[in-house]
Image (cartoon, rainbow, N blue to C red; front, side):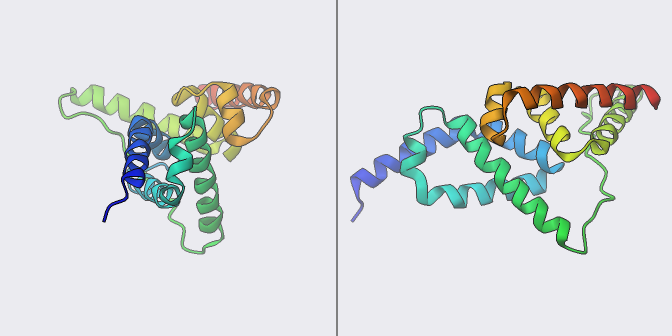
Length: 173
């Protein structure tokens, strides 16, 4: 027999997750660099959150909390892969150019994406993650501070250095 209280909590959990899923998916893609790894990361997140559905459903601000959990899972996975001997570092980023774009425009957009991705890849990991979370995904510095458990002042200086390094790198190519 179904427990009506548990069913209500499950529905609240699903609503919270549904409101944040697009955001979490974008963050996962930005962190991992590809859609397949992002989906794996999201699946790991859901597996970890399911036993804690009551806690998730009761969150006042679920987005930063869920993002922090996702970020920590990413870091854990990154550390595991870094120590593994068979890492594929030759994968090119998906250019995502639409089929309705003119070939010249699609080519230029692809080159721009590759240049930007290469410049981002040359940043230290903590700077790259900060730029992606703040400048690409639109997190505030306060939210990034919550997610990464880093003081806001430290994030401001790191973000400034990362943007300066990106500008110099892109200007030099």
